[in-house]
Length: 122
Image (cartoon, rainbow, N blue to C red):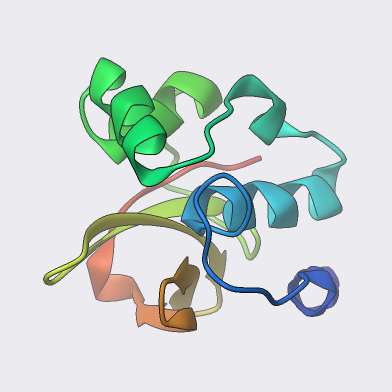
């Protein structure tokens, strides 16, 4: 139930890199659930800046892994995850039952687990 409360607490706004994007969304949910603010470890304000930060590590999975460490095979609701979506590519979200909830330019979406690439227990 805490995950649903955190999802409902997310302030809906237009997609914006550095404010309302997939990484900021996942970091917000994790902070609500654990009190740990992982977003304090990275900062960007545009798509170009976000891509440059990610490129320093490789792909989004490498960037998130650099912050959260080694992925886990035991995931619970609210754990941050990376999915690989057709056309979009890698995106960050949080585990919720048999889905990953992600924030995209089209809004919040539920992605089936089959697109899960990695996740981290927090």
